[in-house]
Image 1: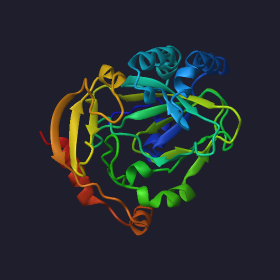
Image 2: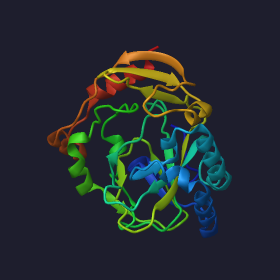
Image 3: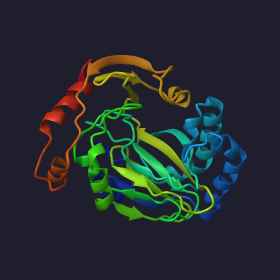
Image 4: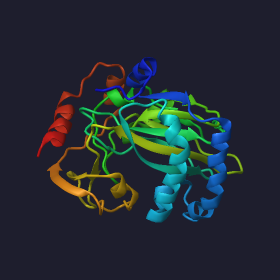
Length: 291
């Protein structure tokens, strides 16, 4: 796997833990993006859910506009940190000041063939974040526990039955405005609810290796195992509507896939490195390699 980070030390940390924290933007750059959010705040907050991303709007014009705003500031900064990568799209992330705004432990969707490549999210704090307003937590090394396939939008998540164990073992990370977490889409992470009286605004941009094929996996409603694989472009993702197959993606194949959900015992064994999920790895690898 080619290094994604220019710093060898950061690359080693990223490979081991599944994420790194870096000072990405200056305080004034973070403030610039926070101010820019006000022009699109109404369009986001009218979605009226506890945790809002720009892509929740299903409005390609809004998504394209926000992507342009974020890329102007974040892309130049990332060029000093990442290597051999393409940027995908940017979103504002808004955690509303309501009790049910916690983001439960999860993994992000699969964007590349993870037997060969690692894609990432770059999560940027635009305000100081802490446990009170919804900072991040990560389960270190969880991208190594077992290979998973993560389609949209409803599928049997591998760690659904051990969320409380994950919360106990995860590590909490506060951030200053301008700090960024660069994390593998396969690492388990989440964030606390926003218990303040103001929305907590952050930004995120996805990135993937420049020599990787960009992919999307879709599990149709009513299907348990039959997953569709699509070749994607940034344009296809900008027009992607949640809950639907990607209209601008190119269908590649359809394969049956067995989604395994871990018990607490299995999770503990994996965390203690006493078990190797060889059969599941083989299933994922076979799925990704079939033509």
